[in-house]
Length: 134
Image 1 (cartoon, rainbow, N blue to C red):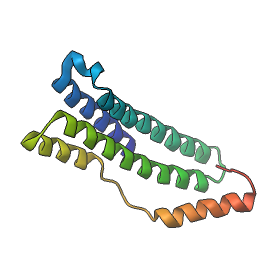
Image 2 (spheres, rainbow, N blue to C red):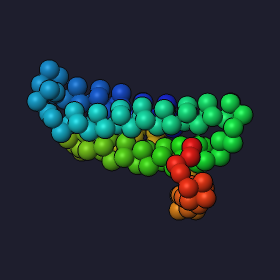
Image 3 (cartoon, rainbow, N blue to C red):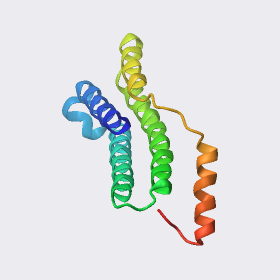
């Protein structure tokens, strides 16, 4: 599940950063900012997925919500991957960096979808409704 993997990446990046900097982590603003980006994107991804599920359970047509959540989740995972690489490169090097990047790579895998086509379908629905609809 993408949300669980995003959270694991956040915890992993935080752990690696803490091992490197310990109490001085608060002085590493760029590292902390990247970890925050990971965690915020994981939270937003989870919120979008849960909202789409709630709409589907209500009996409403949830196709737009599901597709919006799917597109957002993949964009968020790409952001998470980039932020994690930033943190890991700041906290490790050599073999340790390669091992840490391999861990992140394992958790950032996801099923590809046609992002362009999906965005176009979402846009067409919004244009047809003449308003923002989830």
